[in-house]
Amino acid sequence: MRKGISNVYGTLWFVDDSMSSEIMTRFISILVEQGEDTDAVAAYSEAQRSIVRDAKLHKDIKGFPYPQHPFLWAAGAIFGK
Image (tube, rainbow, N blue to C red; front, side):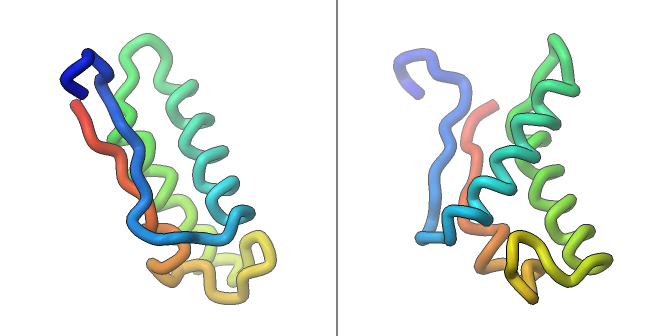
């Protein structure tokens, strides 16, 4: 971040690739929807909340019967502005 990068994504533990793919797909979609004035931290937070909301409704995301468990959606974080 000292080199001028405004945001950094990091993981806190290993997560299944398909669940990581799902949250990153949602994150990028939300980021694109924001247009010119992007906020990566807010976009990632919304992607996490959307996983939890969908899990409560459908009970199954990417083959996981309990995707609302934080182990699956809380493994990463965006640090920055």
